[in-house]
Image (tube, rainbow, N blue to C red; front, side):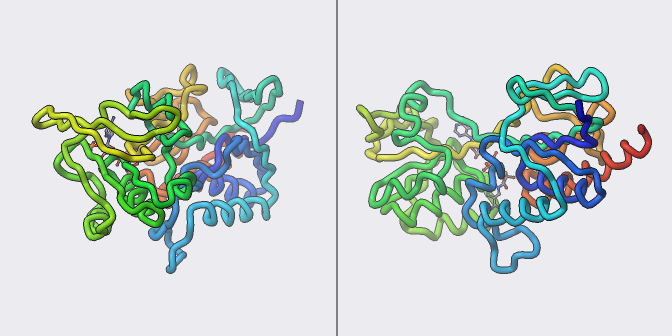
Length: 307
Ligand code: NAP
């Protein structure tokens, strides 16, 4: 069986940047970019803070150019998910269903995925009015009213985006104050189509076949109220995609892979982690890309030192 120099698991800014660096170092990286490549930026509308794009760029466009750049230096892509790994000894083994691959080094860049509230009605109406991606599903709610849940930058971004289609977007937040950056909050508070509802949580999503409302609870006075809406967009954060690595790689209490400070090294020499899968603090495209670069350089050094 062929042993790769480096296998990259997961795409997104960290994975593509790792691929660009590894490919330019002539390591011929093999990337498993997943069944839905590109990561969270694929569901982001405008990226205004990625350096180098003075007019901004959309998330999917940014991922497309990064992928092309990685391809230019002969990264090989497999558009599938890795389903199992064995990192107990080198060469490390990974499986895509029954197909086995092995490599001297692995860079994990599987990112994080949207969180859900965890109520039954949320599952029941998934795809029938409940979504975690305004960019993907917003256009289905033309001239309809919707709610967005959350108080961070994602919630501000989703709510602002949805006003392109929806006459009223209710922004439901469980506290008195948003967590989002000032600039994103200001944009929301200036937008007359967005109605913030503070100190509120969704108790139930109601409807027959599709969503037609939510039951809200005010967390201060305990009172409930009904709101007629056709869509519910969740924007309450993310959890890391680390399930298949947990038997081998140390994680923190919320499941993020642990890396040695100032590096992308995990507890297993030769396995590196970059991007949101190991960063619950910054979680930016540019920091993910930076750590992807670090992982590729560290993998290159590891290979030089461990022929
Ligand atoms: P986040 O900052 O973790 O915010 C999550 C929000 O959801 C918080 O307001 C939180 O409330 C609320 N929440 C969490 N669990 C909840 C639950 N079960 N029920 C109700 N509300 C709940 O996540 P994010 O907004 O996805 O942002 C993540 C990172 O990406 C941040 O670093 C952000 O700056 C970045 N980001 C940047 C941009 C941009 O610059 N264009 C866009 C999107 C995201 P509490 O506030 O009470 O905890």
